Image (cartoon, rainbow, N blue to C red):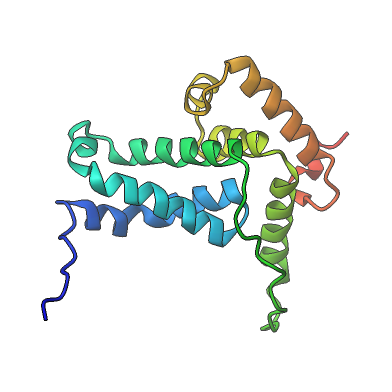
Length: 173
């Protein structure tokens, strides 16, 4: 009986994924606020890139292409109504020592980002984590620069007033 063999990855694809997937996953996590959905988002983008890898690398900037695909895929996900499964609460994990400081800050940021609208979250990640310009952010999200400015302003106001975020404490007045 013959077994189905998986096709070999395109030239340079496996090396790129090994080198840059952690950074791409971090951006996906910041967008989705959930590790599982971040992995799904990145996997969706990488699966699409697999098929077009030769043309993607022809442009010379595969990471820029994949980041754009990551954000546009995320935006298309929130434009569609979700009709799939919704995971239940996860069981409590045992505590292993005092990881409070770093873990609490990460959790506070995750929760604060989760309270933002999806578009506000996308704008915050693109503008302040990915350090993109207003114009580039608008281009990636398919909206006007004024929309980016308004969404960023609203998101930052919400983050500044969040009592659980110490990193914005200096900006509160």
